[in-house]
Length: 413
Image: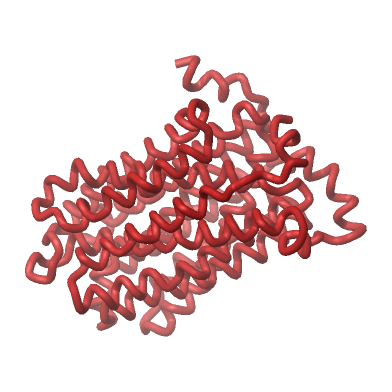
């Protein structure tokens, strides 16, 4: 046990606080944003949406998240990681609750756009907060645990749907999403800003955050590689996991597996168990093989497993294949946090991570819409197989990752 958790128990109070705060924010972000995917079938029927239009709703959320992420990345560098983390959680929580009040597709779209603004800001601020608080020897494990909370949030969302929707309907599911706002206020109390950010703050205030450095000179290559790589992985993830719950519940005659609400939630929770392990174990595997090799390995295996998940005819087989797809097809994001946080200096880290993650998210916003549209022609199973191509593209781009020489030494501090 000490070998697995000793690094956490020996950490300072400030390090533990930031890790818990970032993990809770990411967990609740996952729960709130994935509630839509989990109730997608009911929303389609209630609001008479086509598959393409339903996917477009999620695509619009991702576009908004890209904008919010870039804005909050700048905000985190200028005003603090803790403040950015808190405001992002408050925004997406309140917006989730408002989704339950929407009466028309346009109203629902507006609420999803507001939700996206907060959702986009959480990742960059939380990841930067942890990366700058934890020492290099434990940074990978700490960021991996933060990422693992996404799986917990997704599973928690599935549990909420199973308990609430059969009794109270899909609108009540969204009302449950407002509770993270209360948790955010509690966790934010006493949350310290990283010492490295405080040291850089005065210089940044005087000269401003040098955003232009991301696009020229020694950091431009890192920006390009991270942004395009993340665009490919996010395209694969949102294309696959937006539609995975619907794939489970869709009637067999339409290419799905015909599971009911409770079964769909159960299958989703089992899948997220694999996702959680993939996130957490990434940090330990990377300690042996390196973050870059582990990241690429995860992506290649995910590309191979996705067609098996999408084309298997027996839904019970998904109880085995699903967790493996979750392990490799999501767990690589622990690696993205690790790799991207080490490619940029403190004065740029929040802005850079916000940009590379969310510019990728902007491109990937087309995935839910495209997969939904293609599924109307060839079936959802075959449409989901297309995400494998994006996993392979991301793995190829990842081979070009190379930290600037001046940051290699800093990463060991």
